[in-house]
Image 1: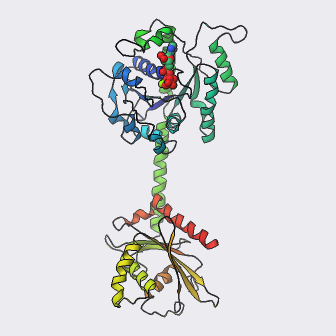
Image 2 (image 1 turned 180 degrees about the vertical axis):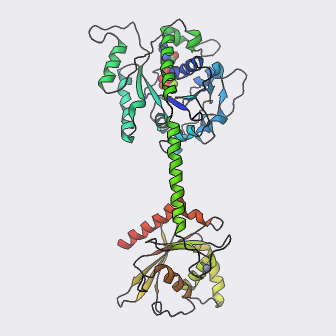
Length: 463
Ligand SMILES: Nc1ncnc2c1ncn2[C@@H]1O[C@H](COP(=O)(O)OP(=O)(O)OP(=O)(O)O)[C@@H](O)[C@H]1O
Ligand SMILES: [Mg+2]
Ligand SMILES: [Zn+2]
């Protein structure tokens, strides 16, 4: 389990509530209290506080959070920083990433595959954009600092997000921050912290007993002549904030040590199972595939022999076709050309080019006199019709071959006839495949396009 990190996310939509102070100092306390623990801090902010605090002097850094979010494994971006805390350098360029960030669990997958162990602290921006949402869903624990009623009000958006997605809210907890102990009230709620806590619980939010006081000393730590930001543990040890951080860090450590299966691990497991399911589905699809080309009857042997994949809408018949067999067939039926005619070779060139990028649909019809006919369509990959024809199938039922439609008859005969020898009320789609890896077409993503095409034809048929 060592390779799956425990994620602690600090988040609030409200700015200036103490997120970054909490994130950076917690990292230092956690490391100080459990020396052999790997503690990593990552910030999605562009304030560079993390860098200012942890960067070792004269140390050249390489890679940033942006690289992490665009696919570089986290462990490759990790920097050993001050106080023994690891960090990934911050980035100024995250705003453009938001649009491209796919899905709510992308970050969870990234940390699961990051190779980083121990605890990762995620400091987020004061918003709920897709990146912050990802940080929330990836977290084993979320701390939401609240300093006043407006920031408490804002929490409802985080809770609502979890409700919408059906995610367990037990990871979420509020922590009163920047509490001014000088302010006292008469009556039941004697101070800011008790008041905030009471309101939080009243709204159904979990709120920590621990809180962080407002301290002028702590506030002064990030304004220094040398431009440095000092940690509470070394420069504000005499304040009560120091003992509050100690208490909080202890609480986090306990929960870390009790978490045998962090979210990143669970997500990784789920993903592995999904992969397994996909593989099974692929193998099942592969099993029903005919071993030969139904146009020429020859078995598929060797690379490059499969140029097209065909499948009937009822899935009873599917297999690969030789490139030459299929394009030759198209050439004959579309241009009414005998393979021995002079024009055939010339037309074949044209057909080859278009067939490699289009999807062909063959749908049997019956005319008023009960004779079978064939509706043929060529579509582009998005499903837009490029060409359509209605072809006569005279002679099909009788088995009369005319040298031009022989290959078509063979294809239909093997794939589309029912027990009575007539054509079934189904249709056939033919997709070009990559000759080097034809079976790829049966993999989940590619196969979905075939299913989409069946759906489209089905819609066109019913309309
Ligand atoms: N316990 C504290 N006592 C006094 N001042 C504090 C305390 N914690 C944080 N501050 C100060 O409050 C200000 C905001 O803190 P911080 O930057 O941590 O908030 P933030 O929520 O990360 O802000 P942003 O939303 O802009 O990222 C800073 O000036 C910081 O020094
Ligand atoms: Mg901040
Ligand atoms: Zn063939």
